Length: 206
Image (cartoon, rainbow, N blue to C red; front, side, top):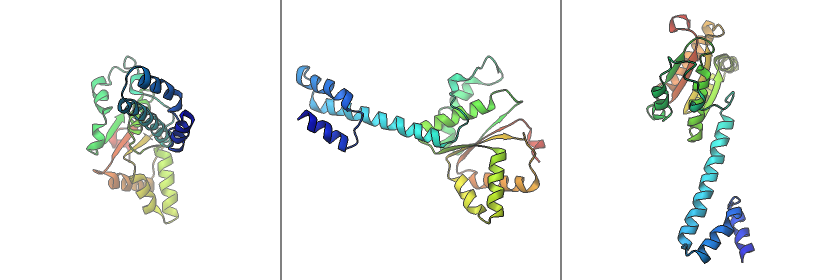
């Protein structure tokens, strides 16, 4: 009977339950744990494991340069960063309001770290997220424009609940690139959230 139960669970895709199944059955038979409680514990464990796997897949496909968390950030190194404000952003409320975030500062201040950490938090909560440098984004949009498929590419980048555009201003942007960038931001505006990191004030964006 036990082997049949294990086979049935495998068929249903409950592949992570077997190592804990024997303990739950012992609790049912020896400790008076109700079958309903045991089944809830088993299914809760399986749901949690599946959610963790799904979150890790979302993180992988989001194209982050590395994995960082908000807690990894060294606030003593950059005391001008408001820790309470960053913690509030990590609640992801800004996503529900389709708000945008701009991290502005000199190189080495942790802008990409914070943007990535917020992105990973979003991905963990199953929000479709994508990370890309400004240079790569504009090159992608320019290629699509040259091949007469710009609208499809804009639509592709607009689908992400959170788009992180890193390093605006590190490389010069010509008029065409600026126009393509503006079209994407306009398409996403008030519908989805965008995080931008830059070392240049708005006056130098061109």
